Image 1 (cartoon, rainbow, N blue to C red):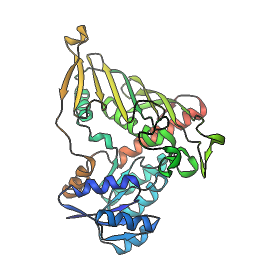
Image 2 (cartoon, rainbow, N blue to C red):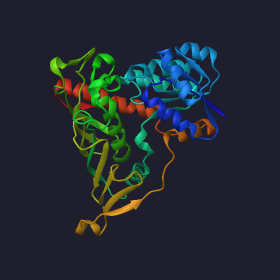
Image 3 (cartoon, one colour):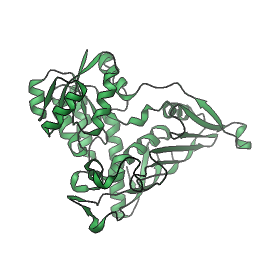
Image 4 (tube, rainbow, N blue to C red):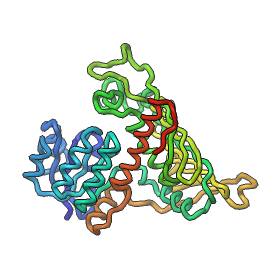
Length: 347
């Protein structure tokens, strides 16, 4: 039986708890949050026997094997490093850290300790993106020439996820003082992983970030709304291909949309999660002359939580691991430098 502790008991932690509850061979034994009352309420809601207000206290008192780190972005590194030092396995929310040096330290520490380490790039739960990765890697569309990817949300223009003006769960994502790296750090991290996993590693990036006015004086209560909410990047891949990746919270009509198009000299592949997590479209061979696309159905893949537990049981670390999380963080860091200096930056 794998015993799990959840650190950080905000909204996303409920998804972690619900996912573990469906997996045989593991159980939730502890919850921890800097707000003790929230940890206790969370523990009661999910039938967790122990609740703590401090990670050090939990490490000293509770018996467990692994941690889901669902803290705020700025706490990912310090919490994960403490847990790794104690010899516990870790599934950390994205982004792995708020800067590449911290992410690299986390990957190195986990490797030294020999613990299972994974980062929650949740759209790897799509079977279609794994099939696209495999097909592109074996040359099914030839040499990759061009790609485009987007992750679009609309919660700054709609109330489909609730009124962002009235909830701290949304407002902190718009405030650098509250640890946010903006749309780039929040969901841009997903589409950078999603696109480069299939199309190939990113070699250089030319990025433009922008923050648009959202409230009088640029502030709501304690939250200064200064984090980027739109990002556009031109990228060059390690194999020589070029492409674009963009993300925004202003995309009316797109509650949560991820799209990837990859074009090679022998065909093209499209993964559109709005349409399906288990299907992709392909145009290749004779169909290229008639521009006809066909659909490939993919077997569902285990989710990140299932793969994390399996990794602990087998001792074989599945992907995406901390090293991958650090590599993606390096791209994000390059994006911030590129935007600040107005030039392309090598990754």
